[in-house]
Structure formats: C-alpha cells, structure tokens
Image (cartoon, rainbow, N blue to C red):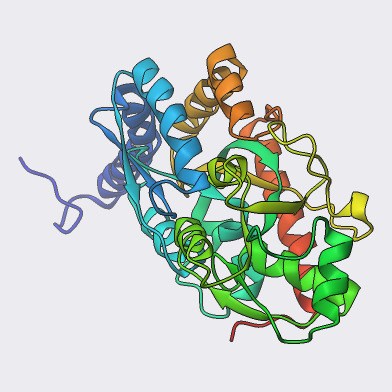
Length: 337
C-alpha cells in the first residue's frame, strides 16, 4: 500500500511519516554540502578578476592560481571582468552557485569602499561574499610624467597648489583606492585637481605615456617596468610601508601627509560555500604564499611579505576596513558623481 501525507491514512501514522520525511529532508540538506566538498573540485575553477589583463590584480592572480590549480588537480581559468570599480566582476561571483567552482580574486576597494560609497550596489559585499584568504598588503603609487616639475610629494603639493585646477589626475575609477587617497591628500594639502576616472590601470599607463594625463594613481606592480625605464616618476606610495621592490620610494606619511591605510588582494567565494571548501582553499593559498617561489615573485612585484590569515581573521580585516573607509568617505563628504 502506498502512503501519502495527503491520503486518509491513520493520523498517528501520517504524523510519523511526516516527521520521517522532514528528518530526511533535513539530513539531505546537511549532507549535500559535505558531498559537494568531498568531490570538489570536479572541473576547472573559474577565477573572476575584476580588473583587466596586465593590471596589478591580474599579475598576482595568475601565478597563485597556477600553483593552487596544480595542487587541487584542476586548472583555474582566469576571467577578467574590469569596470565599475570592481562591481561587475564581484557581482558575478556574489550571484554564482556556492559550490567552489566560481571564485573571486579582487582588491580591497571593490569590497570595502564600494560598500559605503556606492548607493545602488547589486550585491552586499559583507553578506554575499565569503572571505577566503588575504593575499598581501601594500600601497599604491602616485606617479607623474618625467617632465613634471616635482621630485617628491612636498614639491608636488607646492607646484599644484600654486596652480589650482591646472592639472587632471587619473585613477582606476570613482571610489577607487587611488581616488580616495587623492581626496585625503587634497583635504590635507588644499590642492585642487580634476579627477579623471579610467576603467583600468593599464589604460592610465598608456595615456600617461602619450601625455594625455600627467598625474595618476596606479598600483605598485604593473607600473614598475615604466618606472624603471624612466617613462614615469613615482613620488610616493600610500599605506604603512615602502614597497619591497622600491625601498627608495617613501610613503605619504614619511613625507608629511599621513595616510596609513593599506590596500590588499584577497580571495573570496560566494556566500554559502561549504566551510570545508573555504578551509581547503585558505590552506592552499597560505601554503603557496609561504613558498619560496611565490614569495620571491610577489616581492619582485612590490608586494610586502603577505600576512597569513585564517578565513575568520580575513573576514575581520574586511569588516574593520569597511568601518575605516566608511569614516573617511563620510568625513570628507565623498559621493559618487
């Protein structure tokens, strides 16, 4: 005889069948993530990078993905999705299935600054993305063309302050780390410059070489070849420490304009990704960061010794930075144009 919750079976038996059915559903919900984690990864992993090829995030994502992919037995497929200060790429991962097959390699501003600055986000960075591992910390460069009449930050401020609105400066988008760092410098120094938001750092570097824009904020990695070739001059680095590959470039704070907020790169997964997958990824990333090969490659690209953090510690860093940047944005009345 077939029993159904909708038939006229005895009330006691129907109740017991219902409880067994609900218990089975609950057990299935518990076991499903475990099964997914046990068979993960089952195919190549999509790694979304919300920046263009050749940018700082891309340069760090590729060697790390290569090492981790070998250890996991499945390759990482890099998917560059630049634009909208990271919102386009981050949103893809925030809306992806939480199965560990779609991950995000991003930079701090896309998560912590957007959370406060952007009024109409298609996702919530704190709710919809799971922090997996922090990958380094450091600053960004203020660069000028070789003919610019300043050799350091104090000379730059004096020159620009004497010529209000005479210069534009570039950053990789409204609300980017470069944009807000210049806002902080502007508030301290009284300089006036027009902001020109670009889609990516490589575009800034191209236009600076062509003389289209003379001042820009760029990441401290992809700009190194042009700086070493004398095609750009770096005046300062933001953050708390000098770059590993550019120890002669002083921080903004050292030059009298305090700015002690570090940027970072990080690996994220969609919210709801099984804890076993998050922990496995965290362990693989941290082991790769501690290896001599990756450490040396990162130092050559101007990344200081990367912090080794658990997912929980990285999540706390994200929350703390959201609070810090939120205060900066509100105190300076910074809004999206």
